[in-house]
Image 1 (cartoon, rainbow, N blue to C red):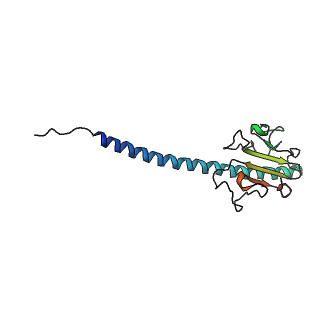
Image 2 (image 1 turned 90 degrees about the vertical axis):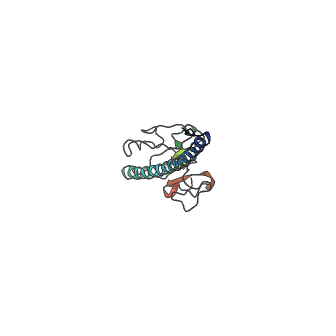
Image 3 (image 1 turned 180 degrees about the horizontal axis):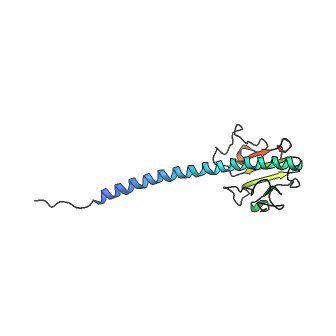
Amino acid sequence: MLKQREGFTLIELLVVVSIIGLLSSIVLAGLNTARIKARGTKQRSDMIQVRTALEHYFLSNNSYPSTGGSWRAACPSYGGYANSGSNAWIPDLAPTYIPLLPTDPNANNAGGCYLYRSDGTNYKFLIHGTVQDISCPPIPSTTPFYDPNRSTTQCTLAIYSPGGSGW
């Protein structure tokens, strides 16, 4: 009489481990795509919130928060300004018109971050170089928040007042 086999062979175990590895790589790839889309959604939401706060500021003060015509940001390569108060990257907007200025979820030390510029009469707000959730480069000109003054290879989106479009 033959002795009955107990357990699994090495080949069977290797097949199971390979299948588990393949399935986990598929799941992780899907999660990465979801993270990229979530960061892109946050960036668009931040743009809309900042635009609304800027318009409320304008209605109250008859001007936009001025940076003296220079670019400001929270990232180190543009001065590392604060997210609230008179020394914020959008001066005096937070906490009165928005609880706290948003920070770019994709910010980096190479200058990729949210940027703001204003002379008091006009403004421009950029997601500069950190857009990931759309085909970039190039950014199609039909994309919402497309910046006609930037190269489509810069991965930049913008909101601006009419006079700030050329910055």
